[in-house]
Figure 1 (tube, rainbow, N blue to C red):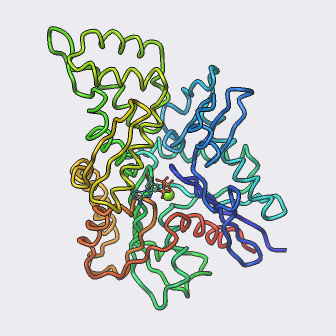
Figure 2: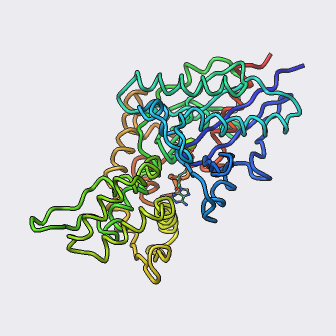
Length: 419
Ligand SMILES: Nc1ncnc2c1ncn2[C@@H]1O[C@H](COP(=O)(O)OP(=O)(O)OP(=O)(O)O)[C@@H](O)[C@H]1O
Ligand SMILES: [Mg+2]
């Protein structure tokens, strides 16, 4: 019997799994009927019981007692991995947090297949960490160790943008030179690749893959920029205090704007420092909101409202976000132009990484016939404008934005582990 194998796209924001079984590729319902699940975990205080995905998000927003985490992938390869974090009062290493999340995906896969799936191709960004090959290797090793812990016996890795290319290849007649633009929550990844539906079962694709590049910039960074530009000023960011007109400490604001750091802020030390500064604040109304956010542990709620604003600005030119959870009637009005100004540097970095990919592949932008857009952040209008500018003549393919990486990893698993 042919080996059943799977591909896991463990994303910064969303995860999916696809299986290759008897020559067929299909997505696994990883949460109820859903084919993708938020990469979020909630440890209920009582018994430290873990919940995943939408359920985790719901429990957190229902204000259940416990600890909520998102953007776990961003921790791989960083010093936080060893440091760990306190979960419901007890120190916990991040592998003990990521492992149950992956185990849950594996369990769903095994149930779907009616057998234990032991062969996996895990997706990985081109760079987990920028300009640090050692940290990058470390990140992959950490992910591999966790995959072993949850029961996989044969583990391979594939770059996420290459996987996305494989998922689109089935629709491509004749040979096409394509660039994959995969902009997710944590990273932006690019591949220049020759595609054709004739190549699907070709074992060795090395000569078709002309170059890969990637940068640790993604939708999480857009949230951060938008937060610092439009939301944090309303809770006292860059206000002053005391006789010397000192600026209030920036760190709490920066951490509140970063998905993977929000949880580290609710310490008695930071809260008492904030309380002391409040006495001497020159903008007590706004600064007091910071104290409330810290005391009530509302960082994730604040950042979710910011992300919601960002997503709304994809369809609308302006948006009014309610912040009633901080103060009755408080809302923040943001224009798309403001958001675009805030993320301009990030767009330049993303664009530079795409250009570097062309250079490494030794092709000109005019040579590209197809631009494959994948990942949630390719929805951002400023991103789309930039890629139209870079590739004015290319066709655009953008189906299955949230599941093409998972599907492509399963195609790759079939090639790697198939008989
Ligand atoms: N309509 C939209 N407009 C703007 N941004 C969006 C939209 N929909 C989703 N996003 C953003 O896309 C990101 C998630 O994309 P995706 O699910 O592709 O990431 P991921 O695969 O989990 O991350 P990565 O590949 O970087 O590990 C989030 O930052 C989310 O806010
Ligand atoms: Mg992704």
